[in-house]
Image (cartoon, rainbow, N blue to C red):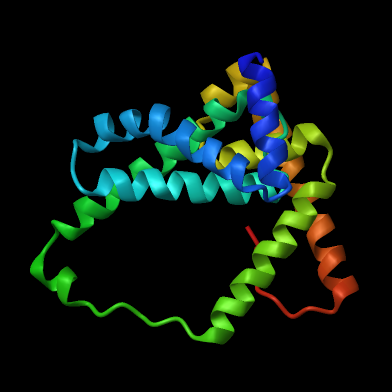
Length: 194
């Protein structure tokens, strides 16, 4: 079996919630992505935590249909790892901040806030899935995967101007579809679901 058909198989199994697919995805991330995480964070306890978060995020993305090109599953996992390691580095920097910052209590989230956040996430995903592929890819890569404009432009064969215009149109289209969906569902949610 080729690597590409193996990756397609893993994605298909995870979509069907088969334990074998989850095991293969976990092993792939542990084998390939963990090293990348360790190099960026230094080999601390947080490496395993972040690696696990990459697995969980990749699993959720696959199950929600965000992996449009299964042959690029490993690249997708690396992109998630870059995002999560960057977040971990920022959090570590904040934790090293002033003593006053450490004393600020975290605000607790109510069940209603959690429910509202889940509703917004589901709404955003459904609207995103209704966008044309180019618009959806640009928004997912830029906002969800936090890829740079330069990387997206290069990978999609766009000039800087083409990228900016396409992203602007995609955001506008997302907003229109989102408002229509909210109106149709009669939901009272906060303005920007992304």
